[in-house]
Length: 199
Image (cartoon, rainbow, N blue to C red; front, side):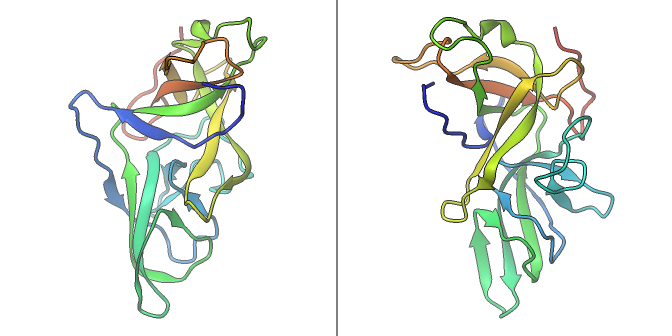
């Protein structure tokens, strides 16, 4: 937790089994959107994954969009025949034998930045436990140098949200009144599981 905004996407942090394993999916060749490690993704009718918004772009809406999971990198054969392993999917690339790795287990918990909506240094975010949020994209959405996303949680939703807050990460120098806290969340609107209502 911190007084500095530094979103890092959704980072897997816990599973009841003690093991967190991404599952293989695929991306359509030429898909014209960067996908960064830590990005929420959805499954579309074609059986491929896209960014987890209404239209699969970073400018799309998130309300009511069920998520498959969190993107964890990919591998493919590029147009020159070179096998490539990458922490992100480069927009519009032409490729074959595409494998996209996704943390898709509904029981996996993730760490993600949540901006304190109260007065930093004064108001605790403890009351947000059990509440639901969608996600938002901080420009430019991620880094092609590191391959990591910079998505983060939105404000608490008045209706069902894509993620449910289950707690907060707290280190020795952290406080629940910090301006930028790290929340622990589960995917609430999940492709493989019915959503629950917030408290």
